[in-house]
Length: 255
Image (tube, rainbow, N blue to C red):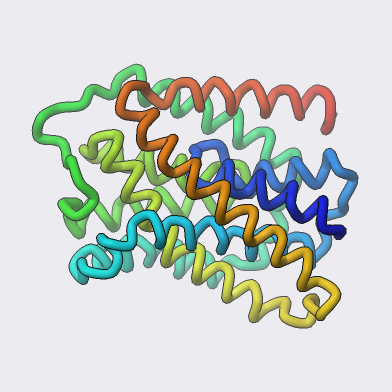
């Protein structure tokens, strides 16, 4: 992988990690368009550059993360389902990383987003801040997150939908999703490094650095834009986008 390809991957990762459109899915589809095979190194590279996006969350929400121990406890409770299933089903999950899986899950997730938004109404008693999420709600959101181990589902999409269904306001659901990405993606990144450390050598360092830095910078801008966007809009545009992208790839790239 050359530096230009790494920057493209970093841009796609930073742009899509926190939007409910599946960053992993978009990275797989990007590799398909660029003619890159899904080798063990590429799969690990896609996970590791996500660390840049996660550090953007740490920077953007540093006040909450550095001072609120109770919030961290809730995030760890939400992380548990993914931790258990991710560890036990690691090989099965990796075998699902294919463009066809991504395309179908983008379409299915898009339909679900539209249906949920058509019936969802924010109410005054809904949770306004991620700090106010209960332990029960945190665990339920974690169950939704575990569904996102199937590529194309979208980690942020699954957790946001889960948050909406159990009584969070849109902004609270999005912010809790962002914060939950910190323990989840840190764990996924370092576990993947442990499993595939032999795939990395000094020649990969430049590409990894370029992808990492690009994803960090782009993600910072996307986080702010997304939170401003959902103050005035629903998630339906993302549902439509998922359906369109998934359908296009099925017709022109996969079938």
